[in-house]
Structure formats: structure tokens, C-alpha cells
Length: 166
Image 1 (tube, helix red, strand yellow):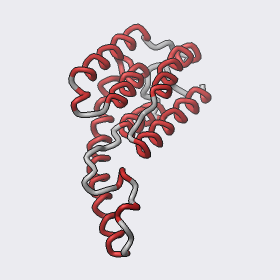
Image 2 (tube, one colour; image 1 turned 45 degrees about the vertical axis):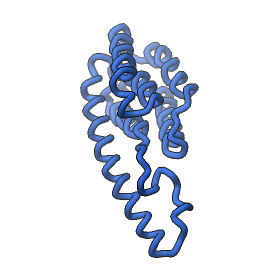
Image 3 (cartoon, one colour; image 1 turned 90 degrees about the horizontal axis):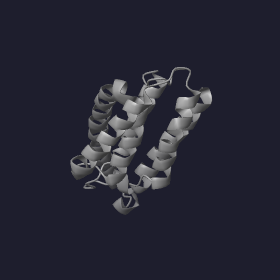
Image 4 (cartoon, helix red, strand yellow; image 1 turned 135 degrees about the horizontal axis):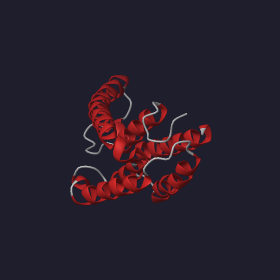
């Protein structure tokens, strides 16, 4: 079971690194997370209700496609669809709450960090062009995949994902 936790954790760190560095969550990574679900279900000592998990995931995709994509990127919608699959019907509300809290707090911290870094670079006489895009003042995008991955990891390691308990 620990191997499932390790693989899912590696997937989420790959999501975070890609989203922060390129504002992109690769399709192959979302596909890998999704295709790993049946393996995780098979290995789990307690079988989650995978049928309802699929329904919730599909509903998330439809809602994301028509509503959320206006606020978050398409890659975020796909990642959310894949991660909600693991949360299932029993954990989706908790997942959304953690995701919302992490997303809001993360956005506020990122906006503050952008200002602080610009101030430091200005005081040191360093060119603002050398600041990574994600930390640039005025950058309108926030890598929301970080919040999705963070909420997923919190639920995974907190034993809050149905069936995935160490």
C-alpha cells in the first residue's frame, strides 16, 4: 500500500513542478493519474465505491468544462477530474473544502510573495526580468494545480481518501 502512496505523491510533485514552472499540467500526467486509479483500487485493502467515484469524476469534468474553465485552466479541470476520482462520492466535499482553502491561501501568499520579491530585486538593483514568471508582479495567472495537488496530498496522507488507508 505504501507504494501506492509513493507513486501518487510523485505524480502530485510532478504536477506541482510543471504547473509552477510552465503553467502547464501535461496530459500524459493526468492520464497516468487516472489510469493508476484501477491499480490503486485493486491494491486497496478496502474497496471504495468506484462506480460512484466514476460518476462524481464525470460530473466534475462536465461542471469544469462548462463552468470552472472560466476561472481555472483546462489542465486544472482535467487534474481535478482525475483527483476527484480518488476522493469519490464520500470524500469529494472534503476535497473541495481543502482545495478551496489551499487555493485561496496560496493565491494570497503568491500575490504577496510577488510584491516582496519585486521589492527585493529593486533594492538589490537586479533586473526584474530575471524573476521567474510565476513570481512576477502583474502576472495574471496562478498555478492552481498546486492547490489541487496539495489538497490531494493532504487527503492521501491524512487517510481521508476512501480505501486508500495505510
